[in-house]
Each structure stands twice: as structure tokens, then as C-alpha cells.
Length: 221
Image 1: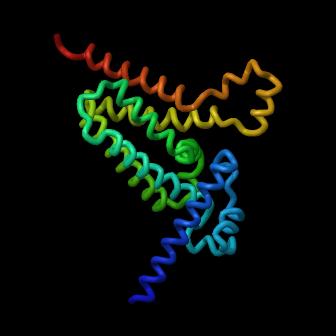
Image 2: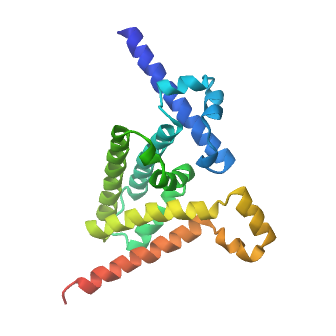
Image 3: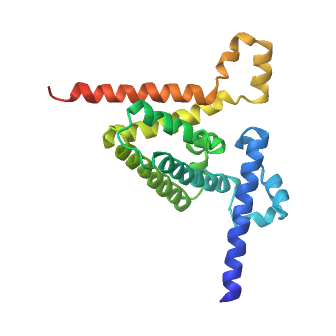
């Protein structure tokens, strides 16, 4: 039993090492599109065929990283809202933006999950990701309702908008080398590569205020 426990501990640690290596490469290279199994395994001292003992594919590895990102975001939101109540919608939006931007690889992955990663793993792995992501989202919504003045439906919309906007704006704000070179040649287009956090914050604040006004308009006089 002790050897088996040790083996499970080693497997868990190696899985964490692979995730950490993939995240580091994404940060260094400027996006998860540049992550390769070859470099990930080289960094942890594992033969590239050995990675299949932990993850069936690069897509599964990145999906695991995205799943962890959801948990990290939920924990960050709960920590920021701790002890706070009665926050205005604009302040709720600010917290959502300021917490998700601390997870740049997660922001990047949100786009890749929707476009490719979920569809490139088996159904049970996709189910596990969805279950974890929805559970984390529910925790975020519960915090928005507890700490603020939005109802569950509007808090859900705000949380969903934060994820969608963060994923989309991250891609725009971090152009590929080809686009970066193009913007250098055509400065008039460079505004497309916008500042990530300020623009995300403004968009979410506007959306949150709109939700609040909608709720006020629907309240009987």
C-alpha cells in the first residue's frame, strides 16, 4: 500500500510538473498556440512518449490547464469579495476584470477551449471539464449575488460576459508575430492591439451598468 501511495504521489507530481511546464511555455512564447509536447516533456525530463501515461494528448493537457484556471479564478473572486456586501454593478465588474487578468494563460485558453480543445478529447474528459467549469462559474455567480446588488440571472450574464470578453480581447491584445509586424508597418491599424485590462474593465463595467438599468426598468413603480 505504501508503494502504491508513493506511486500515486509521483504521478500527481509529474502531472503538475507537466502543467507547470506548459503554462511557463505559454507565458514565455506569448500564447498556448506555441506549446508543444516535445518542449513540455523536455522541461520535465520525460520522454515525449511517456506523457501519455498522464495525458492522452496536448489537447487534454491544455484542457486540464483550463480546468485549473476556472478553479483559480473562482478562488480569486471569493478572496476579493471576502467581507464585502452591497457593491454596485460597476464595482462587481471591476473585480471580475481585475481577477481574471491575473490568469493570462487561462484567458488565452478560453478561446482555444471553445474552438478546439473540448472537441478534441473523449466525451468523459469533456464532461469532467464542463462539470468543473460550471461548478466554478456557479461559485463566482454566488459571490456576485452575495456581495452585490444583481440577481442570479444578471450575475450569471455578467460572469459569462467576463469569460467571453476576456478570451476574445486577450487574443486581440496579444497579436501573433505576423500581425505585430504588420502593425509596425501600418501604425494606423495598431489600435486593434488594444490594452487588455483597461478595455476589458470598461466593457464589463458598461455591461454591468446596463444590466442594472434593465433591472430598474423592469421593477414595478
